[in-house]
Amino acid sequence: MRVIAGSARSVPLVAPEGRDTRPTTDRIKETLFNILQNDVREARVLDIFAGSGALGIEALSRGAERAVFIDNSAKAVDCILKNLQKTKLSDRAAVIKGDALSAIGRLSGRDEQFDLVFMDPPYGEKLWSPVLTALRASQAIHGDTKIIIEEQLSEEFPDILPEGFEKVREKCYKNQKHVFLKIRG
Image (cartoon, rainbow, N blue to C red; front, side, top):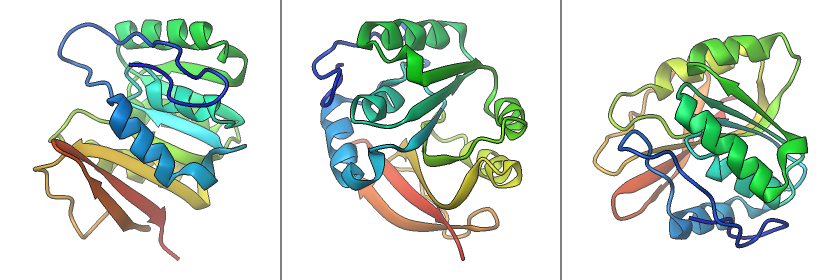
């Protein structure tokens, strides 16, 4: 696993050991960022269930203004911090250790909004639903925010989403998919 493009291109990244984290493969990350290529530069990025931080770090490397990483695992937070140091991107990042819902609540008080939100929750647990609701209530997102959720391929993503969101695209890979959302209306 490495940074694909930008200022930290080819820097290898570390991932937490164990089965709790599924780092996004280089090939899938490259495809995702090809889709998002016009949305990354100068974006403010939120990486929820960040794991190794690979998606937020890729965005920073490609010119995102800032990234905030959220994960409740001490091992994951340690990996994110190490990866930010290795890539020399720490000065444009913040890492929050905690569960997604309480971390989003803490972001509310910071008057910070995000242009891109990556969410890679444990597969099959539908944790994206309460997180979307919390994001909407927090004012951390705005009308043009793009939200990308990674889920296992076999998981049916419902047509009915939490209030105010709509699915605009789904990109399927061999074992997983990215679901792209935007704020409705």
